[in-house]
Image 1 (cartoon, rainbow, N blue to C red):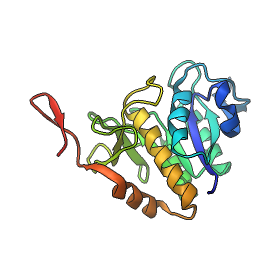
Image 2: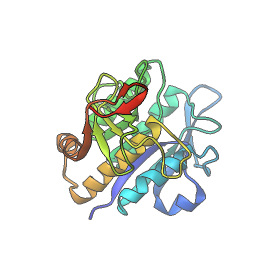
Image 3: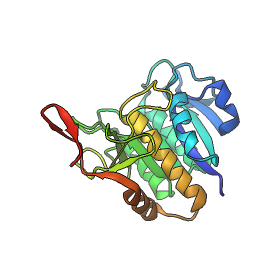
Length: 230
């Protein structure tokens, strides 16, 4: 079984997860407007730790490339996120978990995602089940993930909708985060487990794998205010 490096662009990780981190760094916008790289600190927001704890149970072969971009809330300048994404790919992350979304397209983030994909990284990003698209999920080649209430924590749905490609359980393993962010972490864990067993698999093989294990196909629908599977 091969070790899979998973890029976690988020708020960092809690102290008890430190043993599962291969390398880490924090990224902030300096006084002059340039991105500065600093030592990572312990996660005080809790979001990144919830994502890490949700990814880990899928396989013991995961090590994180921890890029800390969120400090007091789940917001950061796109320039900072772009720098962190480039860094995790440089460190060898094969899979990158992007459990967040911004409403407006930013060229710097678009270019960073394109460069990461060109380098062979697999990007999994949170996408809302309804409403306008968000970024980076809406960029070409990024796998869009939404929360799907039909899915148990070990299940995946093949949505294939205008909103998202796949769905997964809509709550983190510790229950702290709900929605597309949580679902993205579950799917990242599934893919990391697959790559641990099939390290040479490419993007097409991974998407076929996810399609093959999908418990549900097509989006959720509401009938008389009740969610049902198609």
